[in-house]
Image 1: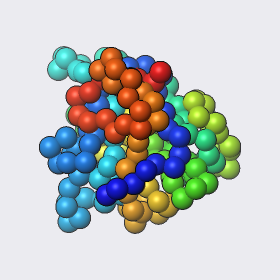
Image 2 (image 1 turned 90 degrees about the horizontal axis):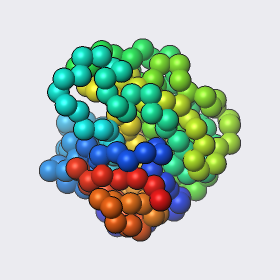
Image 3 (image 1 turned 60 degrees about the horizontal axis):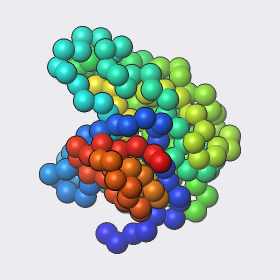
Image 4 (image 1 turned 120 degrees about the vertical axis):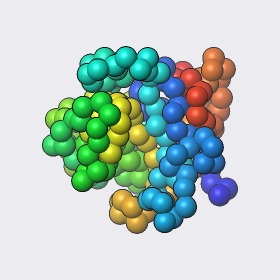
Length: 194
């Protein structure tokens, strides 16, 4: 899909993280799958995390757990879930797949979905206006996830799994130590904001 992101986007965090899912192919992005295998609004989605050692026993052992999640672009908070409980490492809660989440309406036909926030950590409410970089909450391990990470995807409406996916290019970021513009990161790249 040829699509140029209208919203000026930054990465939704202030540190350097690894892309564990990203890109437009199944080889680099587990979200990219046929319609009968999962929701299509996430086929261009990103997952960001810190590399794990395999020795993590509790959530606090993961470096990303509790990391600040920030607004990737300006907009209005359109949806919030904040009461989903964090799962132990290796467990997941498929009953609320997104876990604690925020949907931002960028007022241009683009909506950012950010998922898996820590229980009761979200600091914004529906109707709030946010600017790029505003604190939204903290990274957790809620919903359908096996370890703490930040999930981000762009879509064309609020209807969750009924929305159409939109590729998300980040305006200007650092990728493996190099500045990239209007870039879609892929699996295993180390990324941060400028």
